[in-house]
Length: 336
Image (cartoon, rainbow, N blue to C red):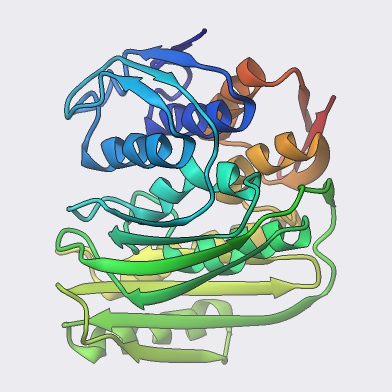
């Protein structure tokens, strides 16, 4: 039994999700205490409870402490089962974060799976669907498996109600090295509005064109959303990967400010020459750990990434090194 400190590093829900994912993959049970103890609302929220319940279902696991507000959990995995699954959060909590807890197990399953997820698809506190689809799954597919995602309906905070489907054909993960982007093939911008004036999107695109000089821009209206929402997506497609940067419309924040912040993320990434952005960095750790190795160059790693490294090392006997190349780039290597 492993004992995980929920206050480790940045002390967020990622500690729980990584623990669930690696427990299923390795077969190692764990107990975690002080779950999200430093947060304004500590313990398991609806999204985290959905992660636990999904992991229990996929891994035929036994669990104690799975209730809203619980700060302690005991998890004992069983056999991973491929199949068709449907998990609904019931709030605008992030569907992509729920997928983080179970995708590694389904990549190691003995057959294909389909997963339907309902809740938030575009949440400012989590990787949005576009990042999952274009950035993360694009690299997973380069490592061997075949995984596809399709957005059925967007779900914004606070209304939720979004829905997407993921189809998984498992295969052993192969090592990957991402030390260069390769040539940049295209740079695109998409401003999406749901049940809001289209002028908001137009103002965001105007700022993108002014600050970045990008011309491949579009405005998308999504009237089928359960509630109002706005997201600006900037995509940089290179030979070796695609990076996605997002800005979310927030009440009281102008469209211009949203666009400036998002453009700043893209400019920082492009100036660094690092192939892997700071959000992708911690997402890659589990796939590389499952593959038994790999290397990537990223922007200076966040506390989130460093915490995830600590959790991975508790489940797997791996050496994970972080080396500063310069003030804009770090190399992270996973080795047995």
